[in-house]
Amino acid sequence: MNEDGVGDLLRQLAPQVLGAVVRRYGHFDTAEDAVQEALLAGALQWPAEGVPDNPRGWLITVASRRLTDLLRSEQARQRREDTVARWVLPDQELVPATDDTLVLLFMCCHPALSPASQIALTLRAVGGLSTAEVARAFLVPEATMTRRISRAKQRIKESGIPFGMPPAAERADRLAAVLHVLYLIFNEGYAATSGPHLQRRELSAEAIRLTRLVHRLLPDDGEVTGLLALMLLTDARRAARTGPDGALVPMAEQDRGLWNADQIAEGVALVSEALPRGATGPYQLQAAIAALHDEAPTAEETDWPQILALYEVLLRMSDNPVVALNHAVAMAMVHGAPAGLDLVGKLATDDRIAEDHRLYAVRAHLLEMAGDPTAAHEAYLAAAHRATSLPQQRYLHARAVRLGS
Image (tube, rainbow, N blue to C red):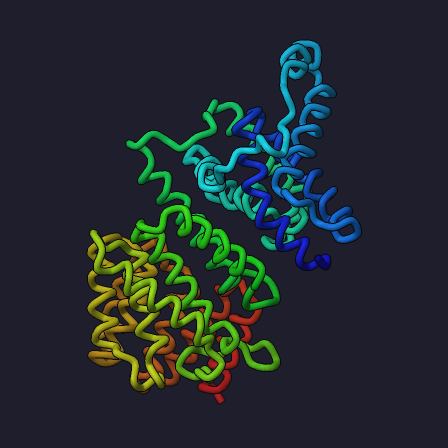
């Protein structure tokens, strides 16, 4: 197996190995370090020596040995050595067959942690990214990310959270936190909030991979299925979102021949499977909206009345200003720009989005639709001033210049 194949295998096995080691020995923070060293050993040895017959068991054994070494070197060595000495390292035949990835995700997304810590810890412990890779993804110094991850591990240690599935009474809320973290990771990858690039493919790909894992473990959960469908249907447009120079291309102007037909087919099948089952949740509704966009042969043939109806259902479920902004766009597409502008005007008093560049960008677009280029020009400039992503700034400035010339 070549190095790329080994890397893919190690990333796939990382959460399973960490889950097995934490379940057996506890010490989440130290176990995570031990597993990283085992993964490094595999990355160095397997391309040259070949992949073991039981790669997961090999990694668990190496990580377990390294964990005992790390624990013996800690300040509490005297108190722990008696316990460590009684541990029996697992034979590869005794390696548990269970996959603890979902338990690990629940632990990383514990509500005691801030969203930023949940995301960082999930990418590090479950995604298998190094601290340096996580830091690069979020454009912060590695030392800053190291402190963030260390604080998250310490918070878990101090909380005394047992390694296992949360009680039934907490499970729905904890699963909602897991899905929200995966959703945030995907969104940051698909539409980066800062930096020189519009997209961070490694983050959106990792979010899809992790959501596939959750879907494999919980195939009958409608919202898990809906989130996976939403990611696939959205990511299907990725190749068409930027031009040859990296400039942003809005959906209405994209070359739909570049959209990924396989991802669209899979996403449509998933949402079609999920919607008839049980209660419908927000991820399923967003996936249904994405499917309507993806299945339209042209921008002009988009089923905007159906999209508007779905946004109205979504708004009744949650008070989300971004959903309300998208609803305003759909309203304009069905009932005309003035109707959409009325809704945007109401959102301008909502502190959660009043200074967000997206509000100004939508207002500019609707003003342009309404035939008011002067006001649209000013709104595009205001949106560009508030945007933190360089490609978005350039796109908004270009729209303003075109109207102002």
